[in-house]
Length: 564
Image (cartoon, rainbow, N blue to C red; front, top):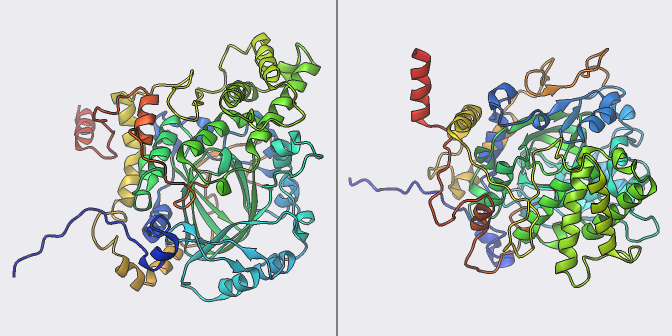
């Protein structure tokens, strides 16, 4: 019998049942089961194997609850922080919770059983059906596997009874720009600091950036979460934007294109603070209930504005953007201008090096808004002369003796015109020499080997029918790791552990750029990839030589050096 040749090309799975209702963009199925397995199998990250590609401030830190505020101040909150569960950790962090155990049923009673909630269809990573809270409680209590597999990642708890019963950690309130600079008399106030996340077993949230480059805090009430975090290096962010704008986003595992990925596992009582700009994905092995929220900080302004510009280029819908973002940036500028004006000669010294760097990026961004926007970038009424405000900030920074030194960070600003036709004045060029390629190869080779089998380009892995007929795959995702007990020191060799002088810190302690959140850009002669390559100094017309995760040549050369 003559054999039939079968293509090895990846096939994009389409949910044809939804095609007539929501269009093609919302019907592309994501291989979430394979991707979730890849996250669970992702090896531990060892900083010494990163070969200098990842800086120390890009390594996750385990911090004691009593030292979290001090740690955030010392590092500018550039490092993800984990506070492990203990009897007093929530109280020490300043997290206020209702008395008794919080469940999905009790949450429904607080917010109202008739409250309508938005869901995400895990199979397409797009908007799912709308449920009432009562319907969601019933869905949540049904035995697994559930069909369809749905996730709730942003149940707003503002203006509910829980608003006065639940509070964010104290460090969040100290860092949050809305708390610091937004006038209480100006309504509405952007409220994004308090959400509930309700995920059933088997859920997978693909890689995304939280809107506006905002930071996130998570506190696990019940269940377990597994994160894969990607450091916001220039190379990683460029790769993320190219991946997010690709038609093959649902069948490509972004972690294979990034460097320095770190896996974080959280259980009930654990708290994670994630700085803005870190692409991340999340797997839910068992039913979980989490509270958390978003916030912008003054120490991370440069990266936050970079993410905002990325959202502009990707044309993310307003529904998935940080509310009143432009106005908040103007209030931020006014706040810092007053701080500098009140103490001439001393004001700049009161600012951290990260705030100074951020103010330079903010002044450039505000100038662009004034030049490009007819409404002057949504300037609040409290600011009568925005041009003078921007110039005033620049003058104060010029007078600062340390203003000319870009200390504390190697990141250049990526701010550019909204039409993307002009390269920013501080754009950068990236070249990886052979030595750096060897380091990247060493850091990523183990991870690439572990997911190669899961993401092989064969017909079986990307067959829609085969996927829907196998219910055991979701059970495999839930049971991929032994979750019965945690290792005594689960992250002692994985993350950078911050220690106290007297006691170890271990003791006593969603831009969401999704498949449905971006608008289809109008056809043009240049693509996002071309514009990014131009910004980095490459000619898009020439073939781009990319470093491979595994190269036989590199392995042979390494073996020869070992023999010698």
